[in-house]
Image (cartoon, rainbow, N blue to C red; front, side, top):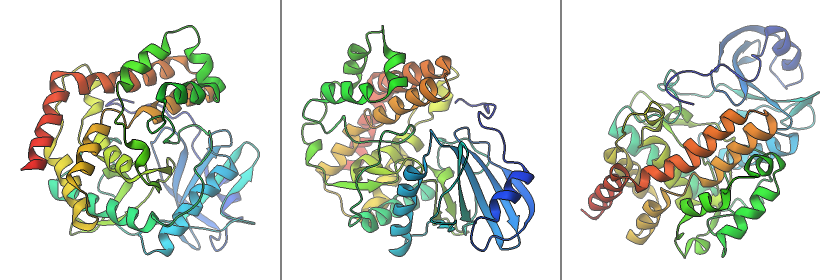
Length: 363
């Protein structure tokens, strides 16, 4: 949650566990070895070498990812893969792509092609080069082009899923109250605090025409460590669709900029931070290489930067307070993420970043 690694919440997948699970997935075969464990905190994952090849095995608590919620995610991945987008090959289990055992749900992906250049860097850190940012923008636009005709309904109220219910609502405050009321863990956390006033300060005056944006299933967690790369610096594979649901294209592009052009983890150490205008501009330019955006679209994307984190931040609070019963991390998600990120955009540094980005776009 900062520049230092956090101890994993979920126990690592053992060789015994992986060996028992692999036999339920088609073509995986017998376990040979576990080669690596992911340090990411929200689920357990391991790189598996088996008779059928090399795979990523992921395990989730069923309250975090129910079989139904995980199947929705896999449906989107399958649609993109059929449209020619380079996404993981999700392996069939018995009766679908999700294996449910006790309190856990499992999924297995064949190891995707590409260089994992960002594997040892924390999530939400920036691109190594401006060219990577532009390549990532092109890849995001390609994903959106393929997603335009995906007609599945949005995912439900499971934690750690981005959403698009508050910002485009005619009354964002009322939509926020409904969002909180539907999530007992989040509702219990905010009980007794002036959360509506705090959230109103974050929302401010949302852009009035957000409701007119065409709905679309989107990735919602676009940053360089969720991408594999070619030796030439292009995106080879897009992965980690855990936050995917129906939002809109500009929301997804704003998320990509917000997560990869601003060094948020450095702010956790108390240091002033400065946004990377070149990375943000690279993402926008790359996107426009593939999928045209008007100047009004780009202006709205920049307007969204201070707001795009709102629903996922609330979902994080729900995860920590409701599923993990960890009020300290829930408070960090509320104060440091939901409120803190919005305050940065209102600060001198944040305002300078937005102004510089607008100037470069117009130039």
